[in-house]
Every structure is written in C-alpha cells, then in structure tokens.
Image (spheres, rainbow, N blue to C red):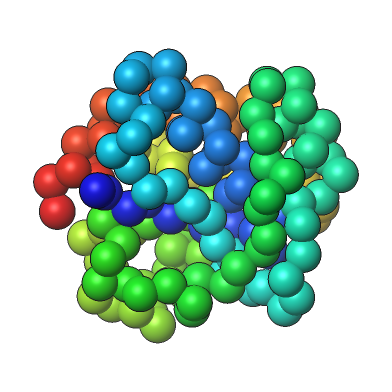
Length: 154
C-alpha cells in the first residue's frame, strides 16, 4: 500500500486539504482502498485541528477533514513513506537537509505537472484562501498520474 505525505508549514490548511483532495480523486478513479494518504507540517508546535478556512474550502468540495489533527513531519517513519509532496521550496530544502534519504521521494507538488513553484501560505501571503485551495486542487488533478506512478514505483 503506497504511503503519500503532503507537507505544509503548520499542517492546518494546505496539506490537510491536499490529502483530502487526493483521497477524493483516488475514490473517483476507483483506487481509494490501495493508498495511505496523510499530511504533516514542517513546523508544528501544537496538535490542532484544521483552520476554519480549511473547513470552508473542504466543505465547498464535499470533503471531510473533521478528523484531522496537525502532526509534525518528524513523527513519521521515513522508511515507509513512498512519496513526500511539499508546498514550498524552502520546505523541500529543509527536509532534504535533515533527511537526505528522502531525496528521490520528495517533490514540490507543483513540479509534478510543470515548472516548480511554491504554493504560498495564505496566512502569510494574504492571498485568498479559495485561490490557494483551487491551486492545490488543480495541481492534484493535473499531476494525478505522476503522483500514482511515483508512489507506486519505489
């Protein structure tokens, strides 16, 4: 069973939404039972639920993130992670400095479907939450086959 982990900063908006969106896409394509999809944060201090804005964006898409609690990336057993998808280039660099064994399994979500770019944290960039959520959703849909291929062939 391939394990995919999405990573953002605090694991309260971008990565929980990305995980829920990929689970939904897998279900739509009849592949939901074969995967372990979760999320983590690169800087998690407290175990907290998703932000109110994450609940709103999830609800708009018919996704349930109510059981999510933020986790730090350091809580995972890296040997069982098949694919690590991060939101920002700084997160990728930091993870690879601390965990170089993840080099061939760590990608920016954006780089799977085109030129690599960071998906900003809307709490810092002040970009509309709906725009960030739509960006993540579009990237998951456009890179779905690549995500499946990378996670399945480790």
